[in-house]
Image 1 (tube, rainbow, N blue to C red):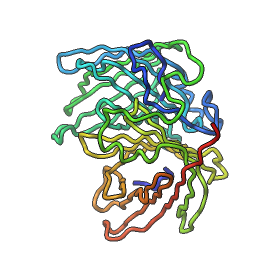
Image 2 (tube, one colour):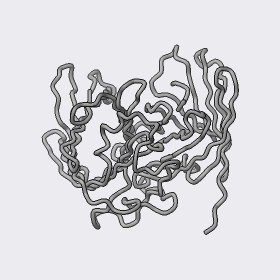
Image 3 (cartoon, one colour):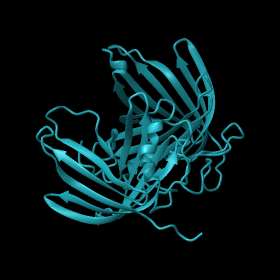
Image 4 (tube, rainbow, N blue to C red):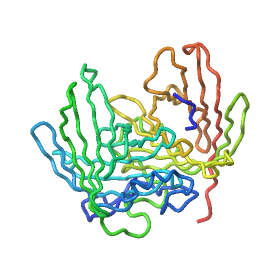
Length: 368
C-alpha cells in the first residue's frame, strides 16, 4: 500500500424513519460546503447537479424476486470542497424489511484522469471501490470480485445518468461469467426535494451514538469519537517533518460506522489539506474495513485489519509476498489520548521501519 499521502445528512421524509437518530454532527472545516474548492480540478463540476436533497425510489432484483422501497439522500461537497459525499437511507431495502444506510465518497482523480466511488453499506457491512470515466450524461464506473471464493469473477458496473436538474438514476449491473451479458440488479431513481436549512438528515448536535444492532467488535474504534489535536512526524525523502493537525470522528450510517475528518497545513501549496476516513466492521469477513480519501491526490484507498491484543493493526487487503508491506498501528489507547504509527518492510516482514508517528490528544470541552 502506498504511503498515505493518504454523501448527505438524512433529509426527513416523515415518520417512517427512526425518531432517535444515531448519526452525529459532521465536521468538514475550512470551506462552506456550498461550492467546490477553487483549488479542485474543474472536472469535478461534471457531477455538480447531484448536489442537494433527494427522494430515492429503489428497485432491487434478487433471482426471480423484485423488491421496491423508498428512501432519502443528500449529496454535498466534502474534503473541503474537493469531492462529493452521499448519505443515503432506504427503509425496507429487502423483503424482510431491513434498512440500508450508505455513505459514499465520489471523487475525480486528476493525476489518473478517472472518477472513483467508494461506498460503505450497513446492509452487507462492506466497503467497495469503483473507478471509471465520465459519460455525456453522467459516469460509468466498474469493479470486480470473486464471490465466496469461487472460480468466476463477478464484474459490476455502476452507471450515473443525469436526466435533468431534478432527476438522476443510478443503476447497478452484474456479469458473473466471461461473457458481456449484464443483468441489472438495482436501480435507484433520485427525485429532488425542497432543501431544508442546515443539516437535513436526523443528526445529533454532538457526535451521535452507536447503533445497538452493530457488531460487538465495532466498539474497538469507539475511542476515536470526539475532537482531537494531533502532532505528526512523517519521514519524507529521508527527513522527518513535524506538523500539527486536527481531527473529528462521529457516528454515521445510523450508528453502524465511524467517519473521521482531518485537517492540516503541512504543504504551503495546499493550505486546505484534508482527509476523510470511513470505518466499518464487517462481520462476515471478521475484519475492519476502512475507506480513505485525501484531497492531495483525490484517490481512494481500501484497507483494514483487526485488533491484536491492545493494538489495532491495519494493512492493505491485496498484497503479494514480494510487495513492500505497510502496517498502520493504533496503540497506547486511553480515554483522552492515543497514538498511531505507520511502518513499512521491504524484506517480507523480517523487519519494519516507521515512516509516520502521530500522538493524539482530546480537545478540552468548550463552554456550554
